[in-house]
Image (cartoon, rainbow, N blue to C red):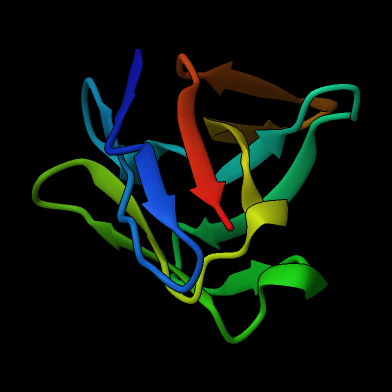
Amino acid sequence: QLQASGGGLVQAGGSLRPSCAASGSILRFTSMGWYRQAPGKQRELVAAITSGGSTNYADPVKGRFTISSDNAKNTVYLQMNSLKPEDTAVYYCNAKRVVVGGSFDSWGQGTQVTVSS
C-alpha cells in the first residue's frame, strides 16, 4: 500500500512537500512517481524516479519540483517550490513494477494541493 500525505493550501509562490510512504521496500518497484488530476482534466504525470535514481519531470514543473526517495524510510517525496494556481490538483502517488510481458501499477490515495492566487 501507498500512503500519501503532505498536501494543503498555500499561496502562490509558496512550497509544499508531499510524501508517499510504502509498506515495504520501495526498491522492489521499477519506478515511483507523482501524478496529478485537476477538475475536468485527465490525470497526468508530474515526476518520477526510478529505483536507480533517475528522474524525469513534466515540462510545467521542471525547475520548480524535485522528486526524491529515501530507501531507508520507504518513502518518496515531492518538493514543490514556486507553486502556481495552475498546480492546484489532487496529487496521487504511483508505484510501477515492470515485468516481462507487462507492468503493474499501485496507487495511493490522493492528497489535495490548492494554490491560491
